[in-house]
Image (tube, rainbow, N blue to C red; front, side, top):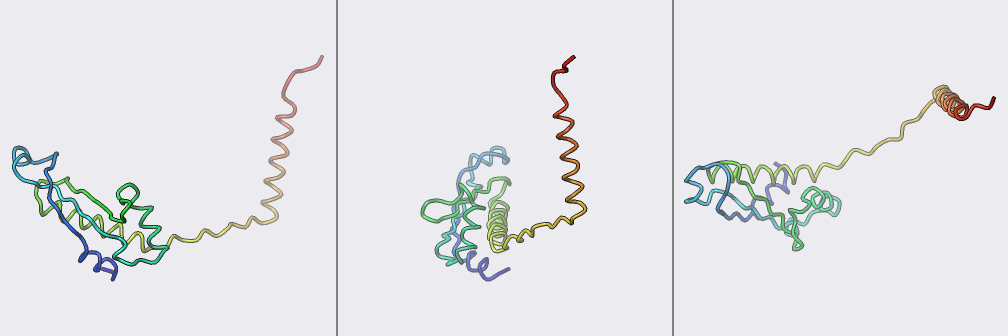
Length: 134
C-alpha cells in the first residue's frame, strides 16, 4: 500500500445506512450498507494526481472535495465495509498512475507512397461514377 492510500484509510469516515438488495427480512432490521467519505483536500495530493482522481470519481466527488462511495452489494456490514475500502483504495492507486504518453507513429516513405497511391485510385473510381453520356 502506498503512502497516500495509508493516509487516506486514516481519514475515511464510515456510516451505515439502510440497504436495499440482498438480505431478506434482515435488510429491514439492520443497516448493512456502508457509506464511505474521504476528504481529498486533507490528503494534499499533487495537482496532476488530484485531477486524475477527480476525473475517476466523477459524480461521486462533492463540491466540498469529498468522495462518497456507497457499498451495498453484500448481506453483511463487514463485507460491504471491505468492498468500500477496496474500491476507494483502487481509485486512489489508479489516480497515482500517470497515463502512458502516446508516441506518434512514423510511417516510412514506401508505406506513405502506397497509401497516397491507394487514395488516388479510390478517387478515380469515385470520379468515374455518375451519369453516363451517350
